[in-house]
Amino acid sequence: MPAADDSRAALAAARAARESYGRLLAIVASSTHDLHLAQDALADALERALRAWPESGVPDNPEGWLLTVARNRLRDLLGSAARRTSTPIEAADHLPAAGLDVDALIERAEGIPDKRLELLFVCAHPAIDASIRTPLMLQVVLGLDAARIAKAFDVEPAAMAQRLVRAKKRIGVTGIPFAVPSRADMPARLPAVLEAIYGAYAIEWLQQGEHYRESLADEARWLAVLTAALLDDEPEAWGLAALITLAQSRAPARVGDPWPPLDEQDVSLWDAELIAEGEALLHRARRLGRPLGRFQLEAAIQSVHCDRARSGVTDLDTLDTLYRGLLALAPTRGAVEAHAALQARRTGAGD
Image 1 (cartoon, helix red, strand yellow):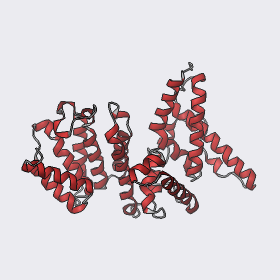
Image 2 (tube, rainbow, N blue to C red):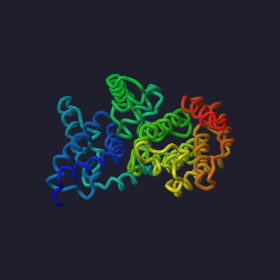
Image 3 (cartoon, helix red, strand yellow):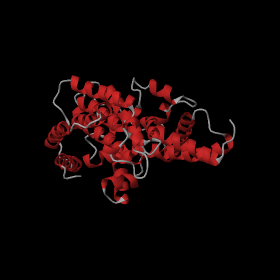
Image 4 (cartoon, rainbow, N blue to C red):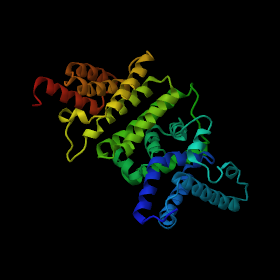
């Protein structure tokens, strides 16, 4: 491998962390159920990458390199613990072998193509306090730091960090299995999983800039589609996938400082392929024939906005109907403000 300068090595490490952190953490943690230890091992691997890659070059499979180093670090940590306690390192026997390709490992993992989904449901377990489930998912699955999560939830960073540490300890103490729950257990955990994915999109979508395809927001979109596809018959999961996909289709027009508001955006910049995909996802949710939920209604609102790319106009009456339905189900501050703005626009008060 040719040597890489510091900036190229740092960019490669940052990209691997951004795109694969959750998958790597889920694989490393699944053998021990110790999230804190797995995070330490993965952090050590990233630090070593920053030191090694400028001299040795960026490896062909950065994620595989990180996984191997994290696995070795975890083995060291478990070995140290075992020497202190004189107990066997049973968990270490189940660690993945060196040099494995991450994608191949994921494909063999009990038919689940992305271990992050299992980790999402671990964080949504009823034994975890409901108020910390979404922040926990944002940190351990999507890699957001405690300070950024604290800002989104309007709490002090130190308090959020302490709550996250306690939640991770509880996962280890209670022995929550790393697995997608049974259908009977699904209703209790799915809402928290969907909220976490939506939360990740909401945190990032305003700051994607020109690289929206490589953003956390687009990662959230991909995770939403994956969740819906794996669960298959959960209309709200399909609704969230449609909502984020349709909203993300307009990201190419949200560039500049400040970027133009929705009604002034050049619709030719919107991603037609994502609009078509979002409409298909929303249609999939409707075909299940269940009562409309919040995410399906929000996706329908996004669909009306995206239809301006086809018709040239925005159907304000349909938007009003959809917002009234949304307010009846989920009167969030955002929905209330958006409906008020729509009403002002319909009456001309917003001109």
